[in-house]
Amino acid sequence: MVTNLYRHKIEVVADDIDLQGHVNNLVYLKWMQDAAVAHSVDKGWGQAEYDQLRCGWVVRSHQIEYRWPAFENDQLEVVTWVESFRRASCIRKYEVQRPSDQKTLAIAQTNWAFLNMDKRMPAKVPQEIIDAFLVEGLGQTAPS
Image (tube, rainbow, N blue to C red; front, side, top):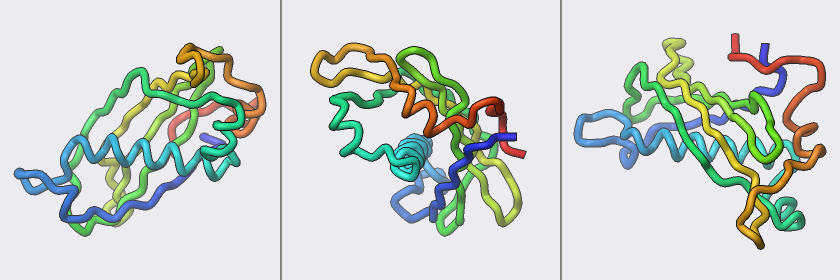
Protein backbone atom coordinates (compact mmCIF):
# COMPACT_ATOMS: atom_id res chain seq x y z
CA MET A 1 0.00 0.00 0.00
CA VAL A 2 1.26 3.48 -0.80
CA THR A 3 1.96 5.35 2.38
CA ASN A 4 2.29 8.82 0.97
CA LEU A 5 -0.50 9.37 -1.56
CA TYR A 6 -1.60 12.82 -2.61
CA ARG A 7 -5.03 13.35 -4.18
CA HIS A 8 -5.36 16.33 -6.50
CA LYS A 9 -8.94 17.15 -7.55
CA ILE A 10 -9.68 18.21 -11.13
CA GLU A 11 -12.84 19.42 -12.86
CA VAL A 12 -12.69 18.98 -16.62
CA VAL A 13 -13.45 22.30 -18.34
CA ALA A 14 -14.27 23.15 -21.96
CA ASP A 15 -10.68 24.23 -22.71
CA ASP A 16 -9.48 20.70 -21.84
CA ILE A 17 -11.50 19.15 -24.67
CA ASP A 18 -10.06 18.41 -28.11
CA LEU A 19 -11.73 18.01 -31.53
CA GLN A 20 -12.64 14.40 -30.68
CA GLY A 21 -14.79 15.59 -27.77
CA HIS A 22 -12.63 14.28 -24.94
CA VAL A 23 -9.73 15.56 -22.86
CA ASN A 24 -6.66 16.28 -24.96
CA ASN A 25 -3.59 14.18 -24.17
CA LEU A 26 -1.48 17.25 -23.36
CA VAL A 27 -3.92 18.21 -20.60
CA TYR A 28 -3.02 15.02 -18.74
CA LEU A 29 0.61 16.21 -18.63
CA LYS A 30 -0.48 19.54 -17.17
CA TRP A 31 -2.59 17.77 -14.55
CA MET A 32 0.35 15.55 -13.62
CA GLN A 33 2.65 18.53 -13.20
CA ASP A 34 0.02 20.44 -11.21
CA ALA A 35 -0.47 17.44 -8.92
CA ALA A 36 3.29 17.00 -8.41
CA VAL A 37 3.72 20.69 -7.51
CA ALA A 38 0.71 20.65 -5.16
CA HIS A 39 2.03 17.50 -3.47
CA SER A 40 5.43 19.12 -3.00
CA VAL A 41 3.88 22.25 -1.50
CA ASP A 42 1.76 20.04 0.79
CA LYS A 43 4.96 18.36 2.02
CA GLY A 44 6.59 21.73 2.80
CA TRP A 45 8.61 21.99 -0.40
CA GLY A 46 7.25 24.95 -2.31
CA GLN A 47 9.12 27.24 -4.67
CA ALA A 48 10.61 29.32 -1.84
CA GLU A 49 12.22 26.25 -0.23
CA TYR A 50 13.70 25.09 -3.53
CA ASP A 51 14.91 28.65 -4.26
CA GLN A 52 16.78 28.64 -0.94
CA LEU A 53 18.62 25.49 -2.05
CA ARG A 54 19.18 26.98 -5.53
CA CYS A 55 17.86 23.65 -6.81
CA GLY A 56 14.73 22.30 -8.43
CA TRP A 57 13.12 19.54 -10.45
CA VAL A 58 12.97 19.15 -14.24
CA VAL A 59 11.33 16.40 -16.25
CA ARG A 60 13.57 13.80 -17.91
CA SER A 61 10.76 11.62 -19.26
CA HIS A 62 7.04 10.85 -19.06
CA GLN A 63 5.24 7.58 -19.68
CA ILE A 64 1.45 7.62 -19.94
CA GLU A 65 -1.01 4.84 -20.68
CA TYR A 66 -4.48 6.13 -21.55
CA ARG A 67 -7.25 3.70 -20.60
CA TRP A 68 -10.55 5.61 -20.73
CA PRO A 69 -11.54 9.07 -22.01
CA ALA A 70 -12.53 12.00 -19.80
CA PHE A 71 -15.19 14.51 -20.76
CA GLU A 72 -16.24 18.06 -19.93
CA ASN A 73 -17.62 18.44 -16.39
CA ASP A 74 -16.07 15.16 -15.19
CA GLN A 75 -14.83 15.34 -11.61
CA LEU A 76 -11.45 13.60 -11.46
CA GLU A 77 -8.59 12.95 -9.08
CA VAL A 78 -4.94 12.72 -9.94
CA VAL A 79 -3.50 10.38 -7.33
CA THR A 80 0.27 10.73 -7.11
CA TRP A 81 3.16 9.49 -5.02
CA VAL A 82 6.95 9.33 -5.20
CA GLU A 83 7.86 5.71 -5.77
CA SER A 84 11.63 5.99 -5.41
CA PHE A 85 14.61 8.30 -5.23
CA ARG A 86 18.05 7.94 -6.75
CA ARG A 87 21.05 10.18 -6.14
CA ALA A 88 19.81 13.05 -8.37
CA SER A 89 16.33 11.95 -9.48
CA CYS A 90 13.03 10.40 -8.50
CA ILE A 91 10.26 8.40 -10.07
CA ARG A 92 6.80 9.82 -9.42
CA LYS A 93 3.73 7.77 -10.30
CA TYR A 94 0.21 8.92 -11.11
CA GLU A 95 -3.26 7.52 -11.58
CA VAL A 96 -5.98 9.69 -13.08
CA GLN A 97 -9.24 8.44 -11.60
CA ARG A 98 -12.91 9.20 -12.10
CA PRO A 99 -14.57 8.42 -8.75
CA SER A 100 -18.14 8.50 -10.17
CA ASP A 101 -17.61 5.20 -12.02
CA GLN A 102 -14.41 4.09 -10.26
CA LYS A 103 -12.47 4.03 -13.53
CA THR A 104 -8.76 4.62 -13.80
CA LEU A 105 -8.49 6.80 -16.90
CA ALA A 106 -4.70 6.85 -17.14
CA ILE A 107 -1.62 5.56 -15.38
CA ALA A 108 1.66 7.38 -15.70
CA GLN A 109 5.09 8.03 -14.31
CA THR A 110 7.60 10.81 -14.59
CA ASN A 111 11.33 10.60 -14.13
CA TRP A 112 12.24 13.92 -12.46
CA ALA A 113 15.87 15.12 -12.33
CA PHE A 114 17.05 17.27 -9.43
CA LEU A 115 19.23 20.15 -10.67
CA ASN A 116 21.47 22.82 -9.25
CA MET A 117 19.84 25.80 -10.99
CA ASP A 118 23.01 27.93 -11.02
CA LYS A 119 25.10 25.27 -12.76
CA ARG A 120 22.23 23.54 -14.61
CA MET A 121 23.79 20.27 -13.50
CA PRO A 122 22.37 17.30 -11.56
CA ALA A 123 22.50 17.69 -7.79
CA LYS A 124 22.16 15.17 -4.99
CA VAL A 125 18.62 15.10 -3.58
CA PRO A 126 18.87 16.24 0.07
CA GLN A 127 17.77 13.71 2.67
CA GLU A 128 15.15 16.11 4.06
CA ILE A 129 13.36 16.04 0.70
CA ILE A 130 13.48 12.25 0.57
CA ASP A 131 12.17 12.08 4.15
CA ALA A 132 9.25 14.37 3.29
CA PHE A 133 7.98 12.05 0.54
CA LEU A 134 8.83 8.53 1.68
CA VAL A 135 7.97 6.74 4.88
CA GLU A 136 11.00 4.75 6.02
CA GLY A 137 10.60 0.99 6.00
CA LEU A 138 7.45 0.96 3.90
CA GLY A 139 7.54 0.34 0.18
CA GLN A 140 5.71 2.54 -2.29
CA THR A 141 3.31 0.66 -4.60
CA ALA A 142 0.16 1.43 -6.54
CA PRO A 143 -2.95 2.57 -4.65
CA SER A 144 -5.42 -0.09 -3.63
